[in-house]
Length: 355
Image (cartoon, rainbow, N blue to C red):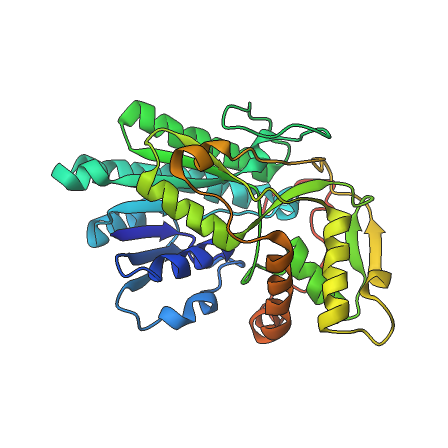
C-alpha cells in the first residue's frame, strides 16, 4: 500500500512512518513543509530507502497538492500536518488558520478530485484518515471522559482550528463522498518530540540546571498516550476502520501535570544524578496559560471493541524510555536549540500577533 502522509517530519508523523515502514507492504510519500517543528533528521535512516519519498510541499498550496496526487497515486492518505502547540497559537493564530484550516481544505479538494478519477478496487479501498486531538472537546471536570459523541467546545486558537478541520473532513465525506475517517487522540509522548512540549522541555531544562516551569499549581490533568501506541492505532484505523466514523484514541494514563513532572524528576535522579540535589528542587510554578483546560480524558471503548486495538506500552516504562531517549540523543535536540528556539516561554501574549 502506498500511503501519502502529511506532516511526516513532525513528532507523531516520523514515529508513524517508522512504524509503517517496519512492514514490507507499505511505501510512504511524506509531504511536509518543514516549518520549525518539522525535522527531516528524524527520518534520516530512510533517506536511501526506495520505499520512502520525501516531498517538501505546503498543504495549503493547491497546485502542489494536486500535483503530488497525480505523480504518486496514493492508495490512502494520513493527514497529520498541523500547527499543534497551544502556546504558539495564542501568540500567533494566523499560522494555525493557514495550515490547519486552509491547508486541510486544499488537501481535501485535491484528494476529492483525485478520488473522482479512481475506479474499481483502487476507488473502493481509498481512504483519507484525518488525525485530530481531544482538545477539540474542551475541558472536563474531575470526572467523565470524552466519547466520539461529545460536543465540540474548543478553547484555544489551536483547538478551534483543529475543530474546524475535523468538521471540514466530515463535510467532505457527506457532501462529496470522499471516504474519510477521523481520529481524536490524547496527549502523545515519546522520542523525537519538539522541545517546546512538556516532557522534553522538562528533561532539557532539568539537565541544563534551569528552572522547570509548571503552569499554575500543576493541577491540570492529561491522559498520556505513548506515540508508538498511537501509530499502531492509526494503522489499525486505516486498515479496518469504517468510512465516515470517528475513533477516540487514549492511553488510559491520566496524570496531573505536577505529578508527571515529579515522575520525570525521579527518573532523572536515577539516570542522570544532579550534584546540587534532587531535580524537583528546580520546579518553579509560573503564571498559567490563558484559557488552560482543566482536564482531558479519553474513552477509547469504540476502537477497542470494534477494531481490537488497545495500548501495549505501560506508562511508567515508556516514560522512563522517553526520558532516556532525550538523555542519549542530545545531538538531535541540541541542533534545534542552536536554531530559532531556545526553550523560551510561549503563549503569554495579551494581544494577538497576526504575523
